[in-house]
Structure formats: C-alpha cells, structure tokens
Amino acid sequence: MAKEALAARLETLWATYRAVAEGRETALKEIALAELPEAVQQSNAIENSTLSLEQTEAIVAGRTPGGGVALREVYEVVNLAAVTRDLLATDQPLTVEMILRWHGRLLANIRDDVAGRFRRGHEWVRVGTHVGANPEFVPQLVDEALERYQADDGRHFLDKIAWFHCEFEIIHPFVDGNGRIGRVLLNHQLLRLGLPPIIVRAKNRHVDYYPLLDRYAKTDDHAGMTNLVGLLLAEALHKRLALLTSRRVVPLPVWAKAVGLRGNVAANKAKRQTIPAFRLRNRWMIAEAAGGVAG
Image (tube, rainbow, N blue to C red; front, side):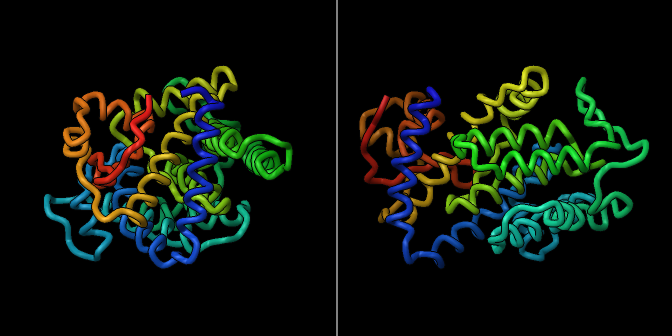
C-alpha cells in the first residue's frame, strides 16, 4: 500500500475510532488487558521464546503452565506482562528514566547484572552482521533519538514512530531485552497519541520485520517499518471498532463465504487491511456485518 494511501486511510479510521471510543474508556481498557497475553507471547516469540499462547495465558493468570517450562521463560512472561500493564497505565512523556525502569523490570531475576542500565565498558553486542553502537556513546545516542522524536518537525506520526523504533534497535542500547523494550516504547508512543497498541507478530519476522531493521541499518531507510506499523495500527483500530460496535465477530473464512469471496482473496485483503479484519488469538476475524470490500 502506498504511504499516502495508508496515511489517508488511517486518518479516516482514527477519526471514526475517536468518535466511537469517547466515553468507553473501561471497554478499551478491558480490550487491552484481554489481548495482553497474546501481545506478550508474540513479543517474546520474536526473541525465540518457545511458549505457546496457552502457556503464556496460564503464567499471566498466575497458574503453572504445563510442558516443563524453563524458569527464564516464566520470568520473561511475568516481567513483560508487568511492563505492559505499567505501559497501559502510563500517560507521561517518554524519558530515559522510564526506559531504564521498564528495562529493569523486564530483566529482573533474569539478568540482574545488566537490568535497568545501558551497555557500558566492553559490553559490545552483535545481531547477525550488525554491531550495536559503541557502548561509550549509547546514552548520548538514546538522548539524541528521544530529542529528535519529540521535536515538532512536521513529520507524520507514523514516520516518527517507525524511525525511532529502527534507530533504537540499531543503537541496541542494552545487553539484553532490546527488541522487547523497543516494541514497548513503540506502543507507548501510540498510546500517547490516543491510539491503541499494536502487536508485532512473530510468525513472519524473518520476512517482514527483521529485514526492515536491516535495511535501516544499511541505508537509513525506514519506509518499510512505517508501512508495517501502519498496517498493524489499522488492524488494531479495526479490532476495537468491531468489538465496540458489532453484534458479533466471526472467523474471516465464514464472512468471506457469506459475501462471496474466496478464502485466499479475503486473507490477502486482511493482510493489506483493505477489509476491516483483525487477528484474535492469532486467527483472522471480522465483524459479521462488515462491508466495504475494497481492492
């Protein structure tokens, strides 16, 4: 989808969302809390966690998951869930102190030696062929990224958020936990604008997530990340609009059959967000009465 078309579509969706969401803060909070386990599971899975959604849900609920789960993976769920709850309750501008606090919580009982602080000394990191920033300059680089993000420079909010996410991940300011904290910060920026959080999916990360970071590292081009964030934001908006206004949501194949669309065509439209579909427990859903089948 062209950048201009996506931006225009999001502006229309955002306006509709603002009107529908007014006075429904409790419902929106419950939707966000209901999707918390899936958000945690997907973000951890991007970092190669092996836990299923069902196991993650059990841990978030305080139950013992089956399957001989490693203690580290339990803490990864507990900690990221705690950070996410704090994120949802926070309405303050992003600061270095906030980033460090969330990182300290994320790595508590996992890597207490590096939790809540930036890399320093000889703590160099490498992700594939990319080497993170020189530890000596990490604090300054994070300060500069925050300053540029917060500058009123006329850039579209999607461009600013996507750029910051790429820049943060390329700096790689921590010994561990960079990806998960980076996605937390992305959602903080969306929530501060009055938009819902998004879920970056693990399934195709080697095709439509990691390559976008790699491209930025090599060329400073964040257009691909802007598009990804935009599509995921459209999905998050469609989900909330459907749940807040629809009598019933149904699996996408059921809806496709009812409106005379082949299943693969409907799935492609869902991925492009040209129909108001969204994923719930990693399954494409849509409002039963949804119309507006676009290109």
